[in-house]
Image 1 (cartoon, one colour):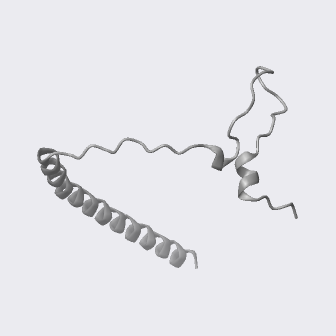
Image 2: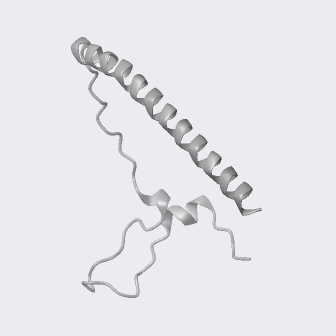
Length: 91
């Protein structure tokens, strides 16, 4: 089992690559914790008009999902019935 490194060792670890494009380039941050996570700009809130459009689409999406589910159920019943007929005919 390998030696467990401390957090401080992980933060200060800089390893050289065996191959590189330029010999002067030094790798920075090849350990996950060395990368600085900067906060991204907050997402803009949708206005009321966009929210109304999303809600209107939601109803149609629900109906589409319902139709797809019905089609899948009918198709699976047909396939199951064909398998039963095949097995019964084979005997």
